[in-house]
Amino acid sequence: MKDLILKYALQNAVRYNGKAELNAVISKIFSGQDIKDKKKLIDQVKEIVKEVNRLTLNEQKTKLEDIAPELLEVKKEKQELTLPDLKNAKGKVVLRFAPYPSGPLHIGNARPAILNDFYAKKYHGKLFLVMDDTIGSEEKNILKEAYKLIPEGLRYLNINFDNVYFKSDRLHIYYEHARELIKKHKAYVCKCSSEKLREFRKNGFPCLHRDYSIEENLSLFKEMFTAKEGSMILRIKTDMSDKNPAFRDRVIMRISDRKHPRTKNEYRIWPLLDFSWAIDDHLLGITHIIRGKELMIESQMEKYIWDIFGWPQREIIHTGLLQLEGFKISKSKSKQEVLSGKYFGWDDPRTFSLQSLERRGFKQEAIRNFLLKFGLNQTEITVPIEDLYTENRKLIESQSNRYFFIEKSKAKKVKIKNASKLTAKLPLHPDFNRGFREIKTSNEFYIQDKLEKNKCYRLMNLFNIKNNQFISEKPDQGLNAKLIHWLPTNGIINVEVVMDTGEIIKGYGELDLKNLKVNEVIQFTRLFFCKLDKKENDKLVFWYLHK
Image (cartoon, rainbow, N blue to C red; front, side):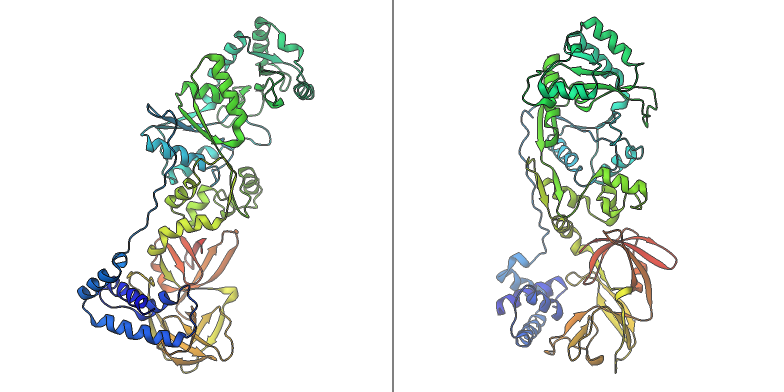
């Protein structure tokens, strides 16, 4: 243990210009260890710290280099993320991210965006953003704000695009290729009811429209543009005995009279996603497609259409669904809660949207690292949210200053007998020399810990108390005192914190919080990290980040 104490004392001294800080070394030694005789160990630490502080800074560096060179510099650990090489990536690599604009991206559906961006940068290729804004279903419709929210979230993740496309601008292209399929006798217009269509598919029976001539189908396709909604669909011919009934003569175009956010009512015939994907992936020169495993049948359909047209096949990579343990992340659910007013906006922390993560103060690098570490795994993954917090903590822990906050509902006012008026000098960080803040005190304090009778407590960086009475200032007197944070009852500021549950907690903070800049990330000592969201006349508003 003596060697370990010496290492930490030297490391602390070198870090802080030749003077080891006793409390910091004690904290480091006690961390994660079961210490039976704390008083004896504290005395030992005290003696070694004195010995170290008698040395010059150069002597301290030399000694630390001899016994523990790995501690001489605080090195930022960076784990290189490696993903498997793409197949057939020797030439030009072109990828696309094609979100359906029903709402902002959340952390789950940002995964394919991050993967596409990773490979585009790795191969110095191109990455396109394709807004997959075909009309969709009544249950899952397009949200106008999503056209802004999606690129906004992607910019936060430092994802740049070579080109941006909107499928709603490309309807004439899909019509042209639909006619080509009809001319190849590979598509036909069907007037069967949805009930009959399901029955025929299930039993593998073709409907009577399947054998109509090319001329009849071209005429019917023209008729679709003025036909009643739901009365006609365009189907592609596959094998009606295919083992997957869903692949049998799939629908590739249908009529919809719903108003589109961009094109209004200009178009009534809309392609289904797999048909439009097959056309666009070829025409845009996409070489590699990264998408969720739930779209395997769409991938099968794309390949089928490429074969019909004699187009080269593309590489398709499927990934499994990513879920956070204990959280149901859904664009549709979040959209419903926002529009109903249950959530206060698209950046409500309960949505786990990229907007909400940015507002809470997550580093984009942490999100990228979190998502990339799962690679191209096809297995459905459920991970604890703490994994994301850990990635972010690595990046912010050393850079976040510490301050005291007392929650109003838990605040207890205590008066300490025999306490003198002091000016407490508190480090902005316990391990890094980031300066100090000062708090003036009297004998009245706010705390939020329950004080037990006949037990010693230490008001952090101030003094020791027992039974609401001052004992001493020094921390190393074998008192086995529990550390608690505190605030004076005067000279404080009102603080609100928007929590990850959407709840707003109110409390008090130290006056130095006024000096923070908006968007600065700090840690409320013994509680959690948070980001200053805004300054108001009578209060500061923070957003909870994580513990």
